[in-house]
Image (cartoon, rainbow, N blue to C red; front, side):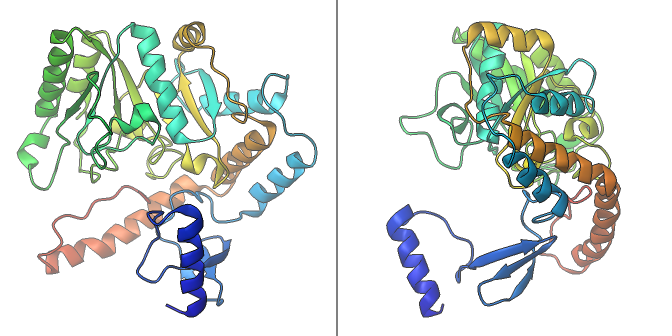
Length: 355
């Protein structure tokens, strides 16, 4: 590490805290991005094969222009009338099942998932929530209760039940039809009911991204969804990672997985790096939430964020990026799978499009 890098790391540690994470033993000092490329302070060029935020490429000209244009006109909160948020929500909800017609815009996926939990609680009158034991849905107090990476201070809340995450490599027999997963969900529901808590819903990434993206057969979630709905609970799809066409086959992960959620959330790629996220649900569920919570977000759905999000949809459509994800992803898998045949250390190659 150069002296300038060491000085920067030391300054960062002093100002942001010693535990503020950095990638790599020799941290990269990035100063510019363009398309799929990142550039460091020394002018070195890197192919960005990691970032899941710059969905249509770093600093895409159309997105940058939309941001600058709206920022030069007006930016304010949503307690004034403005067409930007309405135009965007109409366009966004047109990509879902017709029942999913209403939205709340936020700034981050964590906020969106926090609201989704509260929506399920308001709609059912119950508090219990189910997730997998290898998941991540954000870092608010409520959603951090669902993560096993860092045990919550004071222990896990009584209203949370975690079920074993499917594993198509180590436990392929349990993947046949989703029954084992469905049975685990039923056990969790029974536990919540026995403790007098009751079920509000289940929250899942439709592709189980943080669980390792196991290979799921068609209809895998059907039994679990049926169990949740039979118990009066709601299904929440966390689309923060698989959404906006990344899988190459569908615009949304739940569409690829073959189910329609009651609530879904999105974030990261929605603004191509600009902080914008959303919760989408049915008209009735949103009305119930609005009656139960006096929710307001100062920056959620502001005109600049909506202009950016709308521009991202433009680029996805105009550059046919869903098909691009399908084609490039298939090419990459075609190169990776032979490596698994040659090297025992590679257990399984997984992928869908550029996911």
